[in-house]
Image (cartoon, rainbow, N blue to C red; front, side, top):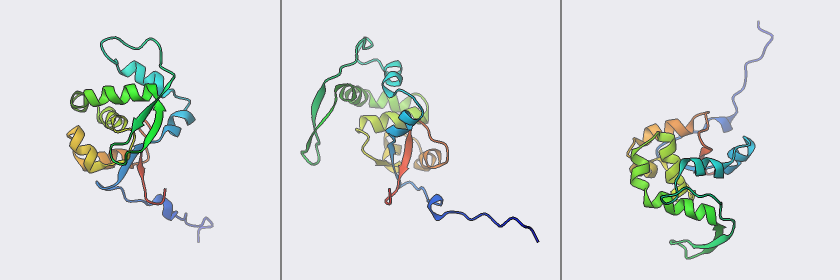
Length: 149
């Protein structure tokens, strides 16, 4: 008889990710990995015809179109969101799945979207999105959002 007991599988680790699972960008992933999201975005995006030489530091008021709630956001975040919304079809069609999903979530203000909703915007299968971002590997901080979270 073996002396090692069988490992127990924690129930919390067994979560089913489907096309209806919502995904979001976990900004803590960037911080914990000592990665700078602003630097990454500046290297990846050209805001306008010229790259931004200086990061805006002030905050701007943003109105939620659904609730009418006004919240302050970083001016840089506002610029990125507007740029991505202006070129969303280009960004979805070119590049990797990870970059396309990341762009869609940023353009949406990081409001969680289901794999189905993301699939419509990036023109890729929802099942592929669920498998890619629902597994153990984290890409650009994109994680599934579960009801218990």
